[in-house]
Length: 67
Length: 281
Image (cartoon, rainbow over all chains, first blue to last red; front, side, top):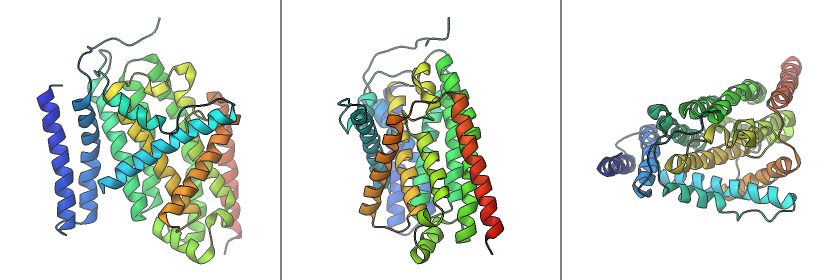
């Protein structure tokens, strides 16, 4: 995955979480709506954060598939 | 709310580190530091990462996202005091996720782990017959109602101890290095996790941490009731240490024996719940 794509994904998930938190704090959306947004955005945030942090290098390989 | 998720994942990983430490000490080994699982999660996050050629890329990555998502949802369900049926539905979804992990990579080790996940589901999930016993007493499956019931009548742990034991067995089934850990046993390398490395494995660490926290916190809420948060954390730690002792002194069972024992306990639970239903007014 390209680094730009990872950056966009990371930014989008972080913005979604921040927006849900702010909207809940301002009583614009109910709790379950904010939780739904976070349940969807949090996994994306975790993976994209790590994908942005990961070391470069490596290429597709074939794992052990039996003798 | 995201702070709850981060705390749950970190505390759950800390508990899993303590689990390894206790097992090691019981077996007269020094063991890793308690924070080893947190270090693992961080270490995997910055390793080189790609998708194997033999993998189904969508499923391979998708299951990691779904795994983190379902346990995040489970945490919110428990914190909000919602229905334990939702919690156990999520537990069943986790079985699907484990199966997806195993089948997505193309590795036979992963596939066997995934297949074993389905085998163990056949024996773990029926243990949820214990829900019926809880309902017989509390008249509700909402966690907040169950907690309120215990506020009046005392902990369900003392009222229906066999049910608590069955739930304890469900949590034991999910603990690594335990007698029922057939989905990631060493003859399968790491079972369904074998071909998920680097960032994907860091995601699995987050899943494992959150899952451990949610299951133990749910156990405290269902069988002990309302306690201050700090007390819940201490009780969770004590329960985990007891689980670690069981794991340390019990050999890993073969898949057949694992399913047989869990099936027998399920049978006993059915008899117990049937008895309760018969004698209760």
